[in-house]
Image (cartoon, rainbow, N blue to C red; front, side):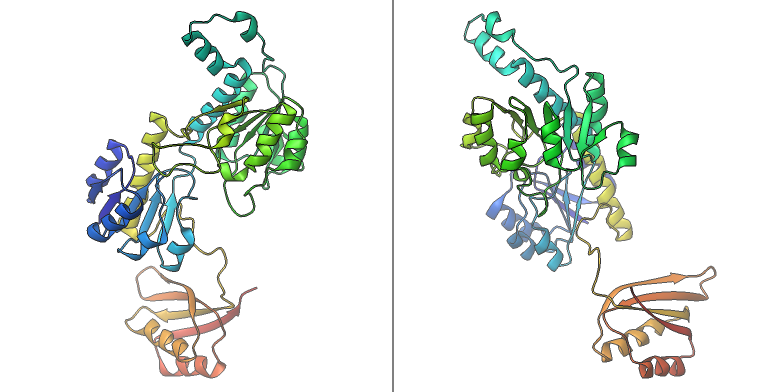
Length: 401
């Protein structure tokens, strides 16, 4: 199996891929047209990326079967284009949770103590204890979490260590789960904003969360609230954030932005970084040695299982619900051609197979096939199949609810 690694990737991961018998090509600086050309030339089965964008032209030119995002998100991959071509997209969720939570708290502390301004002033040869001795302190302040997935959950014990009560909102968070986590459930992001001294965002990017945090959200904040985003820049209406920073004294710690460079170095002219109350980092939340080693190991595990079984762990682009309306259950003797005959009969009626599995019983004498269909075969077809094939023990047609 050929693997093209088109991004920075740990040596342990490269060694791991070679140890499972993969032929690897490590070209971490590839992007855009150069990556298209490399895929055409290398013909990889698996493409591994981190921040590099994977576009439709890249999926058109080669034989890629699996794209692995060596990280938690997958918004830099054209998932729709991959799905149309039957290409798996997988990621490594949860492996960078601690690293991102650590950075989020670093930004909170940096805002409260104005760490960056302290450093800059000292480097200019100035001593200004009078100015920088002003800080609110975190003890007793309320931390609000928007999103309580793996990273959000890592924020909770860290807040507790600083003596900060936690309020939280997430679409999936229930009263029972909130009690178990030791947080107070709020009914909306806006309710979290109004109850918090510090708000930290930990949402995945999808159509429902894009620009979820906008003017109403920021207007609900107390003046001078700290706002932290280490998730995805696009979940925030960045223009609304800028207005809130200028008019309401909101201070922000950002690791992610609405529009970021496609490479690890380059020009960055986003107006948000010119705001006086902005402390920013360079989308480095997951960039600790610990996190990258864990992500590399997970990437190797994904490729290994795909290579050995054809199954893909953590796949993100399989249909949650297919157009199937009926399930044909075929109990049959485990002999050649039985299912071929069934599929030919289904094809003759212009019925499409959505999903299919065949389970063999102990001894390999008999099996049961479950075939999900987008329409119901006629009774005549089923009767004909049963009558003409002695290897079919029983046919049963179920309507899917």
